[in-house]
Amino acid sequence: MPETANAVRSVVTWFEIPVTDLERARRFYSTIFETEIPVYDFGGPMAVFPCEQPGVSGCLVAGRSHPSPHGTLVYLNAAGRLDRTLELVEAAGGKIDSPKTKVSDDIGEVAHIIDSEGNRVGLHATP
Image (cartoon, rainbow, N blue to C red; front, side):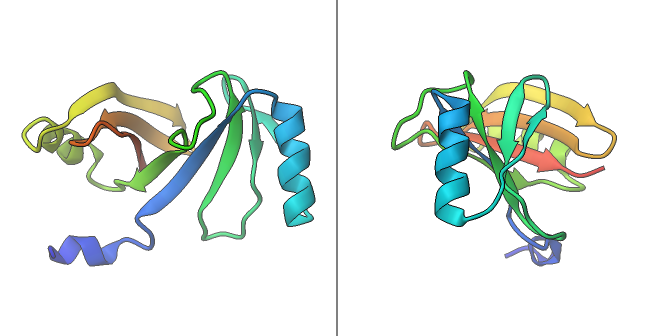
């Protein structure tokens, strides 16, 4: 394994769980985890799971994908190498689904790929 792979804190940086009814899903997860899951607007409402930093969190989001056993979108950590990672996707048998996009100065940049198996995966790079 390349030496740089050991430098990241966690390979997973964010996840999204697709839902049909955001409020119903927020209540469900708030109930089962016995914690409040607040809703924020990041270009549309998302109910964000709380976490201590540094840590991995994610959200519930309606309208981007359809809920299914195969619907969770996982973001993998590409900090410091998002451009390089995207350069390697097609040669490795995948496709770029959406190009690098800046989310915000605090959150960083994201891109989406289709892996060699047909899975949609997010890549995230912190600022």
